Length: 274
Image (tube, rainbow, N blue to C red; front, side, top):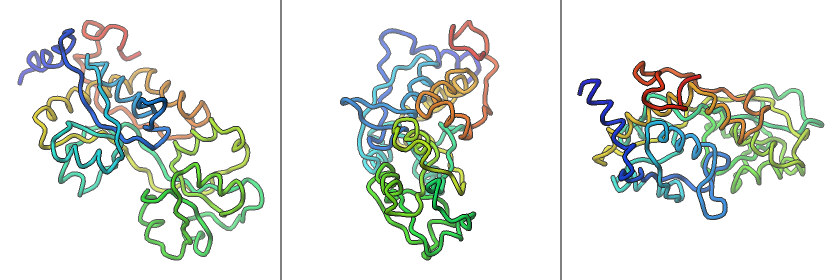
């Protein structure tokens, strides 16, 4: 397809009759995607909506537990799902865009006072008690170390509450989740400190290999996300969810794809790179 044909595909959904893109999203991982007052909200939700809006697409979200999100995208019932880490196993079943929604590190967090200064790396946690949400990976060095006394919890908030009450010595937590709770839970402020940064994980929207619309939509999404990351809108979304301090602390994925034909306001007035 030539450049002109590609532009027609991108622009066609500015028409009022275009149906919204139907996507699946998990329902219980704040601040990325969770349910509030019966609707999907979160940092990833805002990023995905804004990226598709940049290419003239409205989004209709169906919120389900993550395992169902995976299964129904794999089967081709839905075109895409988020939030997902990439792996060889995932690559076998799904298509991934060039850029992630964001990149995020795992952290080891402790109380500001009364914590051993000898804990400076993952191996130093051997023999110590660390709370973490069940089923969330933090890298091979941590996940496969059986000498760390891991206490699995229902969610990250429970882990932090246990640490705050000194029921555990440490918490393993995603950095965005950590700064989200610091922003929204006054009782946690000035209580915790980050002592170890672990592996960084890109988080994606993944697309179905069996859905007929997947290849076209993934190209649109790549363009829309590139435009968003090159504007102030991306930073504003992050800051809205984790606060200015959290936004400065996390790593923002760099823009690697910015098609020249979308830099002029002819196509998307008001949504251009600043």
